[in-house]
Figure 1: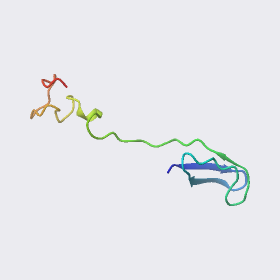
Figure 2 (figure 1 turned 180 degrees about the vertical axis):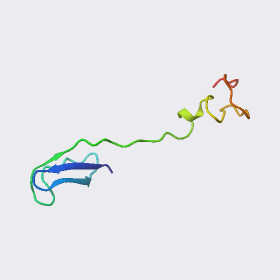
Figure 3 (figure 1 turned 180 degrees about the horizontal axis):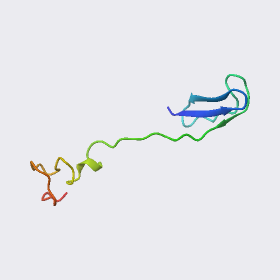
Length: 77
């Protein structure tokens, strides 16, 4: 469930967990004042597993099973 940041006119900033399909808040849950949803910076993500950037032959561990790095993959990858 995403965390959204809101700005209350009276209380200041607060965060709340809401489902993506839930409507945005219109009033502050503490004081009942007007709120505005702020745009957050977001989060990073990590790609793992086959198909990610770490399976290319230019990496430290070759994709074709050789004990050393290879410049051209003989396996056709």
